[in-house]
Structure formats: C-alpha cells, structure tokens
Image 1 (cartoon, rainbow over the protein chains, first blue to last red):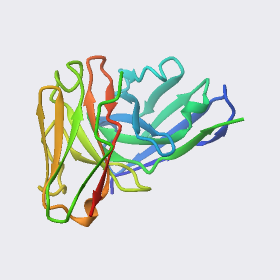
Image 2 (image 1 turned 135 degrees about the vertical axis):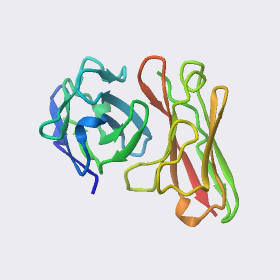
Image 3 (image 1 turned 60 degrees about the horizontal axis):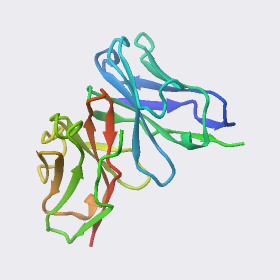
Length: 117
Length: 110
C-alpha cells in the first residue's frame, strides 16, 4: 500500500525550530518529486516547497524562503522539512505529498505545528 | 504569488451538474497546462481529482472533468452525489517555478 506518514509536529515558541519528517512506503520513493503543503486552522491549502527525485533541485514559497529547508534521504525513503525562525502564522497542519513537478497524487494525513508562546 | 480565485461556495441537487471556476493570471493558469484539482472532505487529507487541466487519475469517476480557457480553469461535476460534498481546491504551476492554490470552494449537495 502506498503510504506517507508525517511526524515531528508539535508546540514551539516563536523564533524556534522544528524538523518534520515524512516516511514513505509502498512505492519507489527515489522516482518521485515530493512536496510539503500546509493548511492553517479553518483555512485553505498553501503550497510550501517541493524537491525533485534526486534532491538536486528545491523550490519554496516566498513566505518560507530563507527560513525552511526541504531535503530527502532516498536511502531511508524519508522527506524532511527543517523549519527555522518560526512565526505564529506558520501554525498549520503540514502535509507531505508525492507527485510530479506540478501536482500531488498521494497525500499523508498531516502533522500539526503550533507556534505560540 | 497571489492565490488563485475560486468562488467560496457552490451548491447543487443530486443528479445535477455544478462547475467550479478558478481564475489566475498569465503568469500561472494562462501560461501552463498544469492545473490540478483536489477534493478535501472535512477532517481528511486532500485527494487529487484532476491533473494537467483535464486528466483523471485512476479511480476518479468520469463524472469529474476539467477544462481551461485563457486564465480560467474549471472543474465540472456531473450527476452530483451526496459523497461529492467537500471543499475543492485548484492549483497551478507558476512562472516562478512555484505552485499556487486557490482559496477553496465549499460544495454543498442539497
């Protein structure tokens, strides 16, 4: 079964850091683009970042550029999102998703990040 | 990058057809055939319904169809069913090599 399981969310103070992980199974992880998408409470989806299959190309939304870093370990079938200088407006459910350059065909259930003092 | 523009809500009765619009600019929808649509029932993760404007992934009913004209893309759901009630989001590739979502449309099946 194709599956993505996010972890690493939690409560963090403004200015703090968190690293999210996404464990992939049931497919050839190293063949796919991977994305992070977030959804603030009661709000819509917002694309955050994507990385190509071998990790050599990364792209970010302007709102997180310079603060977030996407990476992957194809040997461990795991996607990461390192989040620094967190702000209250980063509070959201973060979804990991498999896909292509411009769409996402498999989604995880999400992990919740809360930025609050 | 500004969000794509979707109507906040649409509704229809079972068996009817509804169309959800998604308006962007010449920097996203207007320049690329890379529009996708996602369905998100309450409390669940999104599900891909349409990719590259009009392609359906395996398992998505052919009641769902997509199209594009100029800077506007559309999702049409025909033969509405109660299970179609959900939030729907469009997304497009942009000239900045990023992706952008619409604000979402709540579909109510009356």
